[in-house]
Length: 282
Image 1 (cartoon, rainbow, N blue to C red):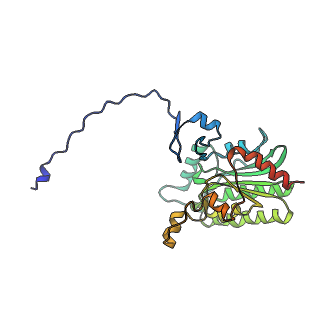
Image 2: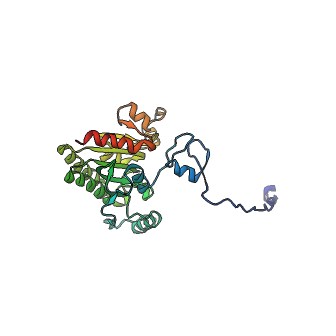
Image 3: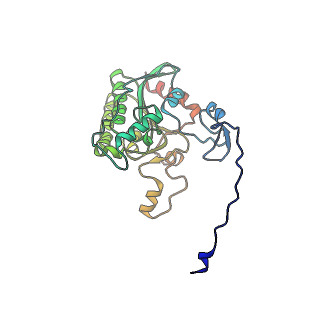
């Protein structure tokens, strides 16, 4: 028998746990600068770090409240839900994943759509929520984005779509990819009718969403330092075997290279959207 079989594991001393009276969720660490922030102060600042301007992801309804006039939003088709067309199952059935996301977020799918006003001007909206299965685009999201565009077409009002997505939803296979064509066709109809379409890209906007309606706006705007692109930087580096430039696929890099038109701080979002809506609307 080797000597190492005779070595005994050292006994760990019992560490006395001290109870903390600090309420859970009172503090939050900034993902960018590492500063410890008071949660209530962060929420008062629209979930933007007051020190480094890091924009936290926010829910669809929080974003709608930031963008639009108070109590002006009227939601359309809130109960649309996927019927699991492919009967998909991996480690767990797709139906169970949907139910878990519904329970966690209170949403029926990734996207919320409806109408609202911005400084009194009517608009049609579709806003994505990353909390619901990573903001993935399935049949329901494609339907709601197209629905918002169809409402804009019928009422002759500007359309605003806020993207926050990891891409197409794999559990719906080819049907999710078909939403790229569906939403792009609805956008083309807006263009032929001369109805303005404003696309807002937030962190992240990737995959099939970035490859379709997200980059087709008359005006493409973005939040600071948002990740925007089709494939992620790591996948691209592995494919081309080259080191990517600093800040590649972030909002600032895309603006400097002509892919987006403007970067807008969250506190200025409503004012900027009002400017664009009034500029486009007679």
